[in-house]
Image 1 (cartoon, one colour):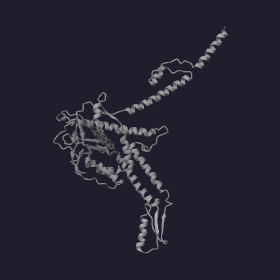
Image 2 (tube, helix red, strand yellow; image 1 turned 60 degrees about the horizontal axis):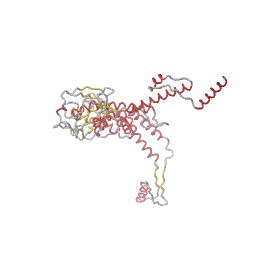
Image 3 (cartoon, helix red, strand yellow; image 1 turned 135 degrees about the vertical axis):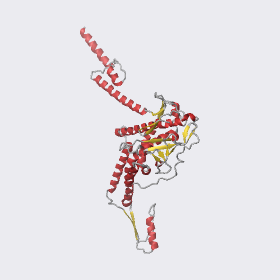
Image 4 (tube, helix red, strand yellow; image 1 turned 45 degrees about the vertical axis):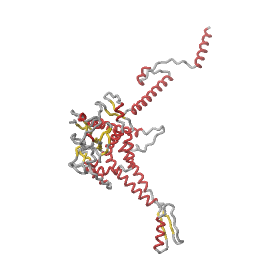
Length: 445
């Protein structure tokens, strides 16, 4: 049996004493076992319901239930929340901070293993990383693959979150069922073929977090309503109101005029009698109510940006004069990137790689997944160069003042060895010095 413990609500799998991978041919998964979790789940659609503040509150009440907690209402909330353009843009930007970084497989001494680094560049692992990042938004992700092709796992799918219970660690065939398949138990048929990624719960109400989409949900509900209110305002006060006047009493004639008014769009026209009249009434005095909608919408979007990207202006900040992003925004995005990279690294090293070994992928012991820190090294080098330049400028100022910075101190500050060099005076100074010397020689004679 594998030793298991929990750190940050992520299951840490230690290599078992009787490694089942020894009984599996290289590249040949275990036989005579159903590994598709999707085939266990009944094809039931998760109903989309109207979301408001009450349903937002009910979602957390359901998740925090003492004896029968469920995440169904939360996932109903989330599937509407991510339809918002600003929300999905923030999510994509946050994920891109990590997915654009390069990673490598190294040994315990930090040496890069090129063969296995290339192996982990396959799209399969890029999708695994993507689902690992999704757990930050949804609270958890359970993914399943069903076979190995040419020593490479394949057919990766995401399991419906409404069928997964993070509290009971099982997957059910229908939402709201208590009993299900325990995907963290080694004797379960799905164990080797699933990766379960979860987040910590800050309130200790569960062993799994709710994801940042729950915090975003309340702002998105108001944002969605504002869009509807704004659309009504435009229809009532911004669009001209067509009015037709006629003295005709014939139902056919009145219908013709009505149709002419109804079909005015796309260069419409009407043929009327001198007694008929068509006019367009515009609301010139609609007031400034529309400004309240725009202001509230902007504030809600800033709140959402702050929750997902740690800064209100992370989506809309503009480069400064030198093309640099605001320093506060930069620090916020770096914090987000660090959190997500650490979470992915933990998932890959404690869940993905050990389970790959269990199904026969012969990954040598001691190899681990890590992100390259080229960006950090480059930033440190830039800061170092700036500090060295400042020290050199101080040395130049001292020289101009008739002083000299000791070479030892310069090396201590910059790490750059320096030697004192006698500088030849300019040609003009040589000529002046020669004339002065000759002048005094003449006087002595």
